[in-house]
Image 1: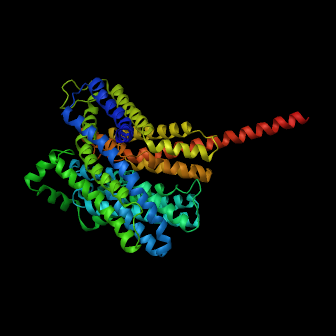
Image 2: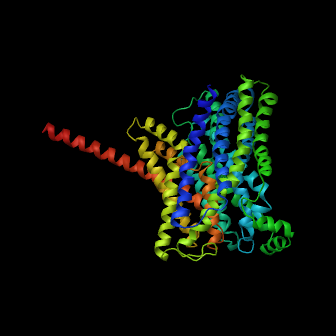
Image 3: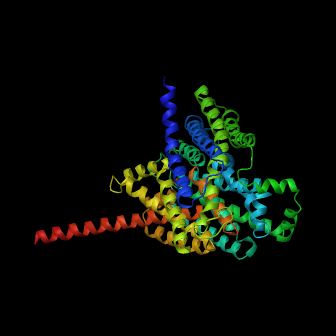
Length: 536
């Protein structure tokens, strides 16, 4: 009797996030692009698997993994030295990265890269996949370590941002100086968005705050901010560093020759694209993603800390749900979200240019078609962001921080508008063949200037707001759409949209915060002047 409503609430919460986006994509493809859906039944089953798997996974996360993390965070300072604690957190960073639902989507897109146009991008996504994910995980682990130290010592986030962003931009410029490596930049900056998902953020935060509380530094309302920012930026540096290393040991000609020498069967498998794997393979990937993380947490608790679970049955139930949910979600990601995103992305160019799959293309005048495509991306970004449950929670936090002066709705719409504008800008980057560096450097420079003039509270909220917008539904959908569009318009690569979706809300929230502060200052000055006039 109780299980049905309990499960139904969680299922419908995920359904509300997925269904409107899927309906919007399908309606746009059918009505505006006049392109029929391929394998509609499979798509429907895949979308249902996304909703059902994500509901199970999030429930398992809340019931099993999160309490596990809090328990370990509470016990670690009492039974381990600071170096041991930080080492455990670093290893945990790798584990949570593998467990992120969106990381599997990133790995799967290697098959769509043209090796002759982007040899190093092809090499990283096809032959260096494991080192790539490991280094991204190490970036997350280092971020968790720095975040924990920051919790314990109460460091300000502002200098940490400057000390992280400036080197990241410098290394990006070094990579850009090598024409063969330029295609890596979009992948690297998109990796920052992929890592701040529903596993990494809550689990790392629960351990970090637990350590801070045990160390006698009880968390304030800002305790949780900062880790998400670092977990977005440090993986970017890791991927760029890997690209520079690969460029030292392999030439583009060697990569292209090796790719052309691949067996015909392997080449045929690549040609089938993103959704070419079988459900059994996706189940194996799901187990491989979440199980090592669970085993590591059990090892830390039972062996290193010599402790036990307070409620073994309930925690086991949560962990089993997380594994099953991840497996089902992976199947839905491949056959549902990835497929529909790829279809829509491939069909978008029909609005303004001739494509083989649509005999009636181009459907509209060039200018009108481009406006329609960019507007479509803007609305998609707005709707996807407002559907993210984490944004609601962030809005409530900010409303409480400002005693209701900065309302939840103000934050939600400023973040959503920032993401929408960023995604539209990312789509424009692919359509017009813009170099991502020309967008990243000015926008991050603007963000740093706004950071300098902003208060600590708004800096914390703004830089972490980018992480809450890149959820397990938005990331695979936007990645698939961007790469499908990139392939259709013969772009070198379709990465970079997520990086634009991350910087957009940072600028929007910082700008809103400065406006809010300026307005408060003007109101105060007006009150002082009015009181002086009254005295006269």
